Length: 411
Ligand code: HGY
Ligand code: MN
Ligand code: MN
Image 1 (cartoon, rainbow, N blue to C red):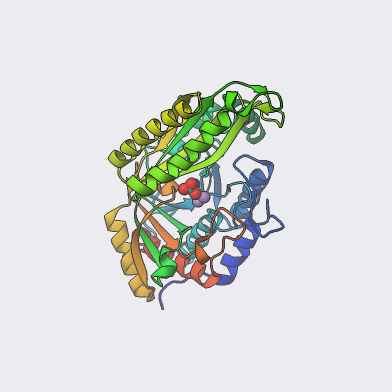
Image 2 (tube, rainbow, N blue to C red):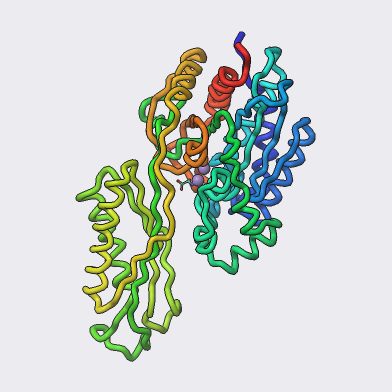
């Protein structure tokens, strides 16, 4: 009988790791470096020592469980994901991956065959970009710059407070680069966060590559004025430019860039109250494509749309690039290992690109990396409605185990 994870133990660890930051709606609210996120890390750290692993934390706060095989200078197989969530997110995004990686490492450690690799189970900091997208894994792969950390998505003051709370420093984060001694390979299990597996009746998704994600701040500048006494046609209302731009984003993508997606996730109004015509509205927009050339073309098109929206309402617009996560390919040999794992387990699988960003995207810069998906019910994610059948979670963990076994166990 081939090696299998222990479903009860797996469920027990998942319950333990989804308590901190649990919401009444059944989701998780633990943005990176929040108290709830740090509590979840404390819980994981406790489980690491309880289960006989070494706990390691680097300058970026990345927390890992390490088990060393008999060969002191053996390479390391890293498996992981992230414990941080989006605000009011779901229980499975990230936490399922860390839990599955932990269960796989425990099962491999118990397997009778000699291991030829050390095992490292990783929880990366701020995968969700509460502060900086994929912050922990980009720090670990030497792809984070001082500039990235100088312009955190929240505001710099809140970022400094969050670093203090977590006992981190900018220098420490930038020093977490381990690209000089990379793992031999990196594997991740994650929920799909879409409906493609459901639609094809696949139990497992084998990810071939991830899209690039490009984030921008577009400030529309008008003139603050009295909401009562300023005639409607004499206003320079920044909200109108921002709103026209928002609709133009959708129109341009649908009409000219159906292979891309673009999202306005936030708008900040200044001064931001009832009785003042807004002086400035900053639009937080991101666009995604697996082709950097198309992403560049869409950016140019949206720069034009912003200028047109501003002109239409007597405003000015500043279109600033905030940060980008570059698209990346998963390792073809690891994808083939994953295919044979699924075949051996009798799991129907499909090969597909990921439209979401993942830590595997960073790790692919320094070592062969692979990412497995399990289905998301009705595709919901980044909300309490996020759900994956536990049987699918166990099937995903077993596919992860078989792949890790093929890499780490002497044949
Ligand atoms: O935004 C994403 O694609 C990922 O969930 N962080
Ligand atoms: Mn995730
Ligand atoms: Mn996410």
